[in-house]
Length: 213
Image: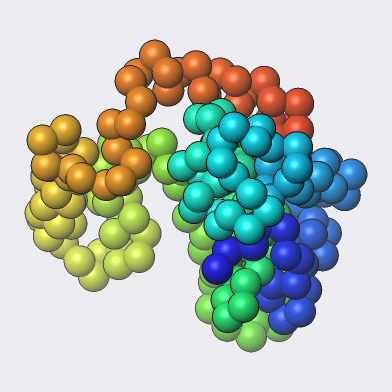
């Protein structure tokens, strides 16, 4: 059972304590505002009673019961704050991914300093960061770039391109209306999606955090 604002997650620490020290452009106050929004949307008396959502309703029941915008905001708060449950911890991905990138860059910098001072503990470290938009708009090129980063010259360009073409064909097939059956697919038309994205970009609580994560 997912409880979005249950705070103890990884090693009995919160996402706030684990990730924010590295993400200096996001303040503790901004995080607390996201947490407050989560409280306001989940099992809260502030939620419209006509939606048939109670203080015992599940996270899933909230997502399908709330209006589209509030459901989206609740899902995003879970991906920022994280979830605690009886047997698991999840969510917090947005801050954790940003934290991981920062930590990896710090590690590379330390590695470069060790190399320059002949205190090498391991070989040269390299980091490749690719955003999701590139994967979805240029799937074949993205796969070639990723394989080139991982395998270098040990894998031929022809094999990289063959794998990339197979991936792009599979991705395109799944993304088509006729064959892709994910529960969230095609639930809203393009104009509504654009409207939700526009509202999210102007959200006073979530937009500043998403812009810096």
